[in-house]
Image (tube, rainbow, N blue to C red):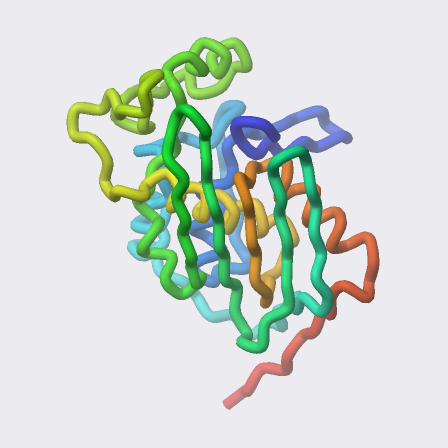
Length: 231
């Protein structure tokens, strides 16, 4: 976790980092059966958003399979707290995933809010990952973002000004990207989630802990497999 989401296979010892952007695109496209081949220790960053993965899925097309698909419905509020950060999953009457995030970096970036319905993922798909100039060396030391540049991330200086020549794609780009990350991290549940996520200064590790808390008590959720309407 930390700066990105990393999947680790204990049996082989192999791990793959920065999976959240491609998982967000897959989840938003409604794809539930997919094989992803990755060469190297990290998913390509592309432009730092999910847009390239969304475009690839659209170009490839999605095949509707005659197979059941389980859905997880949140039944009870679940929350995790860590210092000044919080993440919650709440029941909601509609059968969809919605995400609300508040992002605040005191002294660096102003507070922003983004509310997202998964059906409107296109509104955040092109929001890029971001970092601060002083964190770049730390990322490289972790073996991450080695292909990183101003072409695939927003880099802010100490005053919260983007160093990218073209500036921001949206005034609230960093909170939009946080919502994008949440969608990708929640995809690790292994099935679509119907519920509402609320994050206050959320991060990958916090959302991961929230999923663990959700699954700790079967009363928190219901998993159903609706019957398909066959012709």
